[in-house]
Image 1: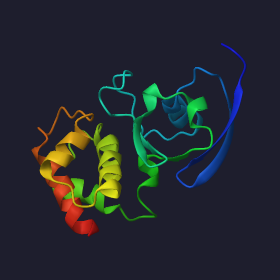
Image 2: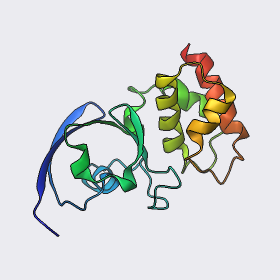
Image 3: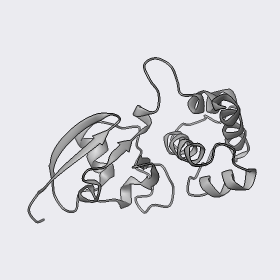
Amino acid sequence: MGSKHRIQITVNGEEYDFLVHPNKTLLDLLRYDLGLTGTKEGCDEGDCGACTVIVDGKVVTACLVLAVEVDGAIIMTIEGLHKGDSLHPIQQAFIDSGAVQCGFCKPGMNLTTKALLDENPNPSEEDIKHYLEGNLCRCTGYTKILDAVNIAIQQIK
């Protein structure tokens, strides 16, 4: 398994220091070492988006990233999106549009939407579709998800 490597990361504003095996994924570190279970384990191949997190401002699938690769990084999980008891406007938009059904894909959808709007606060419909194409949902048919992103755009402005 190899010797462990020391990494330091900031997750949702909190600093952490870990000794990790070189084959440990970011997904496993977040879920099992930090207990941040909002990051879901889906396909384990980077195709479904359930494990999406934001690393240094960019969307990544945590199942494909090794923990040693994020040494020094700033990471946001779904648990870090809201502050206190208030939902983030993106989270509220998903609720208001009816885009939340089983909820399994929502953490990844919410974080991908956040990264999109941080990068492009006024995206076109095609921009939204392109950005979200790595996130699969088996419940909504995507129309309500697109509605949610458009509501979030208006709420954040």
